[in-house]
Amino acid sequence: MPKNSVTISCKNVWKLYGSNPLKYLASKNFSPSIAELKESQYIPAVFDASIDVFEGEILVIMGLSGSGKSSLVRCMTRLIEPTSGEIYFEGSDLLKATEKELIEIRRHKMGMVFQNFALMPHRNVLDNIAFPLEVQGVNRDQREKRALEIIDLVGLSGREKYYPRELSGGQQQRVGLARSLAVEPNIWFLDEPFSALDPLIRKEMQNEFIRLQNLLNKTIVFITHDFDEAIRLADRIAIMYEGRIVQIGSAEELITNPANDYVAEFTKDIPRAKLLSVGSIMKPTKKIKKSGFTIRKKDKISSVAPKIISSNSIATVLDDSGKICGELTKDQIIDILFIDKENNA
Image (cartoon, helix red, strand yellow):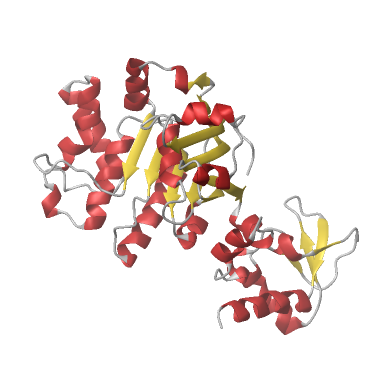
């Protein structure tokens, strides 16, 4: 994706649990090994993490339970204090912000949604969504007007007076999303927001999330342990293991060029033909004349495979400007399909 301005940046962030962790890190020149940490009885929730989140992108952070996903996001928002490192939000040093400044940033610039919907049972949908604006001191008429706009945006019109107990799980999650959007945040943090939902409702909420992002173009940090969910939502994916960020890239990059066995294991069951683009497996060429028929570099393998295999001819690949940039053969397609069959055997 295009590199827009950086909304939030983490540089060499550590979160250690143990006795005087900052002093310990300094004694190791801020570069202890996992073995040294374990020997000294320190738990690395976040291990020397550096990452930039670009304006308007959906960055998905994933990993197994205990890999450090939530700890990193809580460091980004200073819900927990990092042991060491730097965090910049919109160019300002977040770690130097006072408690009062942090409160204002969270109230006006950050939206947060967690796995637990955390709706107030004594407040109806309208009042739940308007609550962050009430905290800001917005008057009733203005906050209710804004809440009604958000209710319409997330598809809850007609349920303004319902209480959480009267809503389905998916509807409750929509209220949680709506409440976090009421303040019009610059960055949106979501920590496994759909994991407690049934599969059908979860897919519905993913579709709703994609629709909202197409409308709002928010900067989003989204935590999940589900690679299928990450593929549907992410512009880029960061995979974590034992507090480390082991690889960052698009889903296609992670699958075609995994950094290690851990990343390869994460991606092994994903059907390559549905995810990989023509550009990832084509043979580059400088030919001027077209051969066979043409396909686009960004087309998915699954969409062009039937035509290439049935025609038994070489397809000419065109880039976004319509220029010839490569060729794709039947054998290349079969290789990808054969790998998928092996993985699913």
